[in-house]
Image (cartoon, rainbow, N blue to C red; front, side):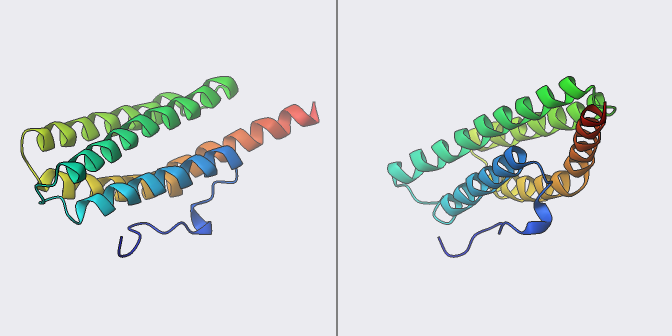
Length: 146
């Protein structure tokens, strides 16, 4: 791989270690997917399998991560649970559309998917997840003070 597509920076930290670790893992998975793209036009079957594996890992890990976040949201009765969950559902549906387009032969779908993953993910961390974690910390602080 030439360069990483996304480089983890401290500004992406939300301040909740398990969520930060999951975000870092997701960035690495996106970077792996991006690395596979460099030779995606190749007829090499091993490369195609590596790409499909990276794509599956991306989808599976995103589902795991969203599930983890939503369990926390339910536990603290997060004020924006429905809104945040709807972002997760919309994201999942969009990913599915890109994957289906790729499976139907569109290589452009992969370029679009990887760009979408980067843009959405970084914006989601910097805005939506930071608000969510701020409320988690506030709730935990209230519980500590009781």
